Image 1 (spheres, rainbow, N blue to C red):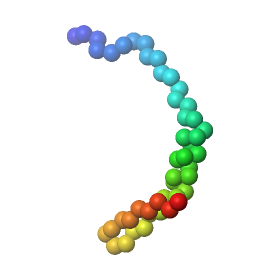
Image 2 (cartoon, helix red, strand yellow):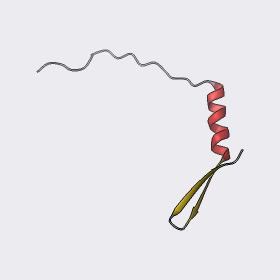
Image 3 (spheres, rainbow, N blue to C red):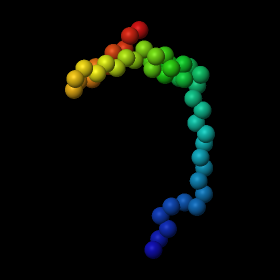
Image 4 (cartoon, rainbow, N blue to C red):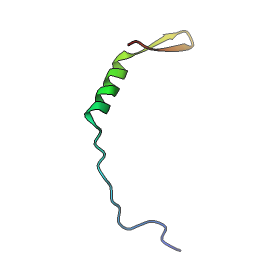
Length: 46
């Protein structure tokens, strides 16, 4: 049976920019989730 995968793999480390991390942190701080009964409401408060 033929070999279907490569023997060597080159994996690059993915390092996010500082601006990307800051954006995600601010977004998560602004996100509010409210559960009422069987409903779930998500609000972004800027």
